[in-house]
Image (cartoon, rainbow, N blue to C red; front, side):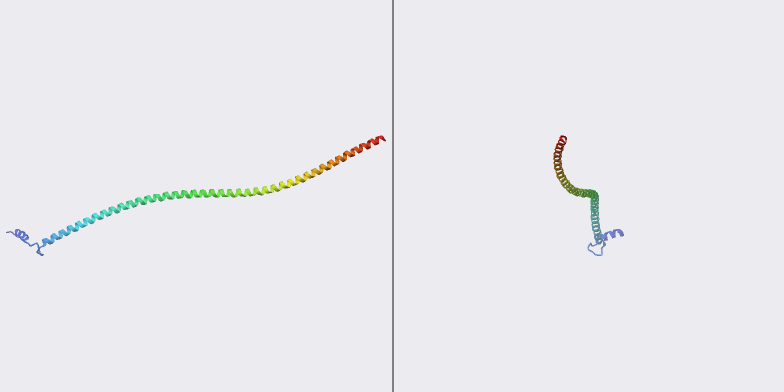
Length: 166
């Protein structure tokens, strides 16, 4: 027998339960290595899936963020427009308030003028009444004077006739 055949036979003749035999320890080490490899591959797979999930979540969050930014810009533009409208309305309200104040002042001035004119009308009516009384008095005096003149004319006429008779 050669040394090779003898080593092969001695290998076959080994007791698998012999703790000095390296073959079962190697098999156990290979099995542990395979289990560790399988576990590592499973963890790597889980990590890749988790990474993909996180990337998808990040993309979705980024999309939501972009939509929120766009909505925020839209709301800010609308708010600016409303603010501008409010300022315009406030300016219009101020203008109308000033116009109302001017109109109220003019109305008050007109009321004062009306009161003054009423006083003038009353005074004019009083003067007209007094003038009417004076006119009536003068007319009466004129009538009396006319009557006196008529009497005097008649008297003068009578006297003239008497002078002629003389």
